[in-house]
Length: 355
Image (cartoon, rainbow, N blue to C red):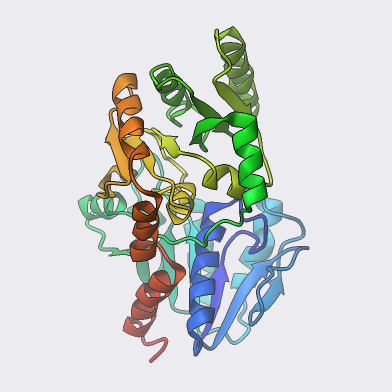
């Protein structure tokens, strides 16, 4: 088998969830061996993996909303082949990309797998943006949504590699922020930051909230300024606001819990990978009813209504009592690269791509 992974630049710092998911799969496949040739798309920076064929497709590092200049080289690559036997796409379905993939397939037909890393807004049909021979979704929520459109899709839960951290780094986080709950999410409406701030008002004495939010748009910058004003107005310094950082592994693993009560995950991975990375470090999480994450029926994941600040705070207190080993066991049972590779090997076999 010679498989081409079609992703944003397949390289550190792995901020993009779709490339991060592909990274976990590639890691799992390489660990097991006997996978043939795996081709990935990179830019100026190499992937850091050995055993891959790296195709320099991108001229610079990927962005959160790549434009034509970045996507055109990918499209041109799809019009020709380099002996790959199949293509595995990792991105959110959208009409423009689907049209380009269909057009390229007329000139260079290859079996295609499409992992739908996220879905469009609820008022947008998914079916018209599908093009591959095999669709894969990452959550039961997404599978149910496609079924309502009459589309059958394979369900394969995501996986992650554990984050890098050190005892020194974790100690530094605890020294700066004390005993804290981490919100690692979006500043946009529906992203959960307002609900997290409201819940923090009901945290037990001595428990703080750390907001790790990347401002990606001008609107995000405006909302960030508003949150800074809210924090300044608090009587006690129990909320800390961070931007993009390069020590997320320390920040996640030193947290007592994660809180991500997002209600709108449009354009986001159904199960944000940072929660799974937290599980790997033994850090439980709390999310909101109605979100795709609420399907994850594990004691280490608390669920409450996003508008119920006291309920969210109560769930945070509950998961704080869970042993870290119990939470890390959730990761070991469900979210390892090996399990991900096993599941995708089954898909590849069903398509006749490997034995």
